[in-house]
Image: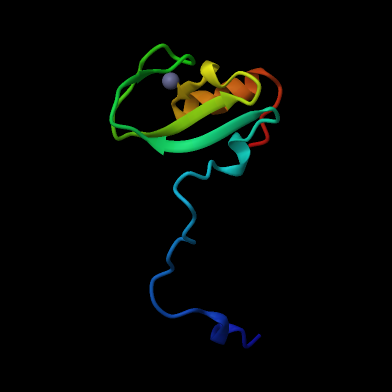
Length: 89
Ligand SMILES: [Zn+2]
């Protein structure tokens, strides 16, 4: 089984992706979901705790109600999707 030559030398690097792209599991039809790190503190509707400045989290914006945008901890959004029966992860 001579398969060792398939090994790539050096350290594997993560595939670069745009910073604003939300992970695929987080996407929800009818909503724009973005991955952001802000300078302000927000309140997460999932756990009612603060989303600290500079912490990467998700902004969820209903496409038909942009003023309803909410900042979610990534983990809280995952739980929310599951609660809605939409979780894919
Ligand atoms: Zn939260």
